[in-house]
Image (cartoon, rainbow, N blue to C red; front, side, top):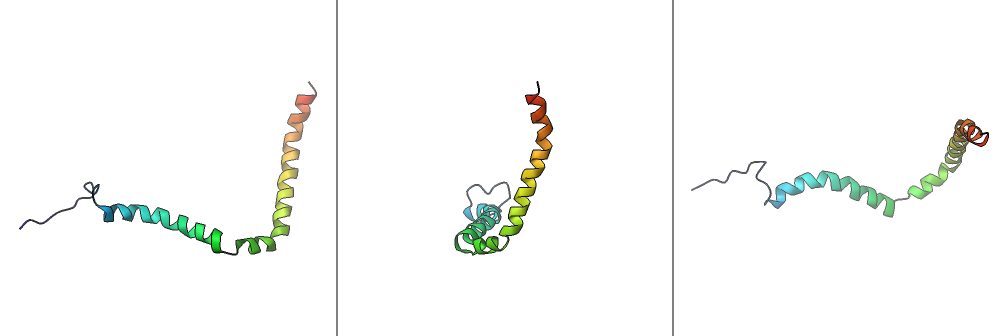
Length: 77
């Protein structure tokens, strides 16, 4: 009788060992997809709409202040 020894480098033909490497990556993706499709994330987002709007306007104003000297320099040439 011969016993079959499977080394980690010799797993190309084995489906069960290959799945162990794929499952940790696919599982979070499928969870996120299920959360987007079936979850109520949009209702939570509506609760934070005021804060998101403030953050957006702050980013817009900060970018205007940052890029204004460059634009004035370009137009003053």
